[in-house]
Length: 97
Image (cartoon, rainbow, N blue to C red):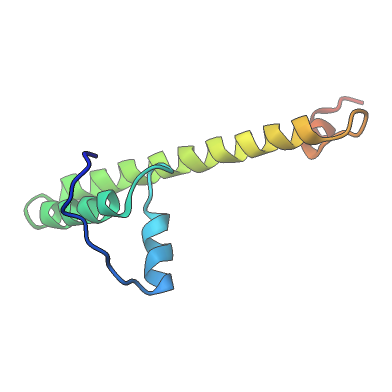
């Protein structure tokens, strides 16, 4: 996104903000990006509902991958911070008897 002097402030209810955050495809996606994406999908659904559905499915898949990646990173961080000799949840699951 390019920097612009044409920036404004919007007041949102917390619930609206949380709902917008759930539409985020990646952590650095701005609210402007999210709102533009919503408008694009809404405009597409009028003329090409099948294409709009495909876009929404694509976004959903990207979000799932993002959360899976974040979860794996957090688990890795926990393992790195864990005291030596104490198995983490991940290590306990992979232990072979």
